[in-house]
Image (cartoon, rainbow, N blue to C red):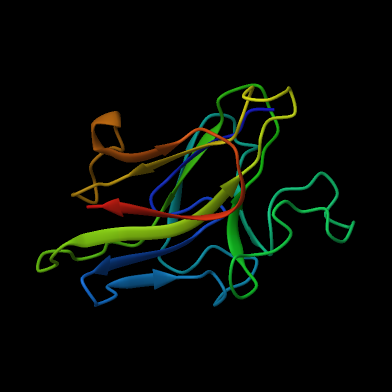
Length: 165
């Protein structure tokens, strides 16, 4: 199993842009359970079968079995973003926040929590992957030169990450 998670601000994650003490943007996904938050968008790279879900907890082959999600629940509240697609391919889908005005921001940080499972093929093989991109113009393509974070190891429990912007 290999899931490639590519996004601005999220995989099983809660996000916030925080310069100094002021929060410019916050999303915990609870406002619209089961749906992508308003003004968020997605861009698909790969087969159309992949998609983001907004659920309580991580991926599972059988959501009807209580406690089968890993991690078992959202970090806080009841909803997190989840990209779950089993494949040996390189499926990915960007989850994109609405535009955030950072013009007057000082010491801006992106803070989020994420978890990503180890692949079922053995330790270090086909792990989920998370890449975080930053884009300065709404119509610009998402390209490698704007990558600001990359997480390729298994992260079994919710883990906070901080990226300086």
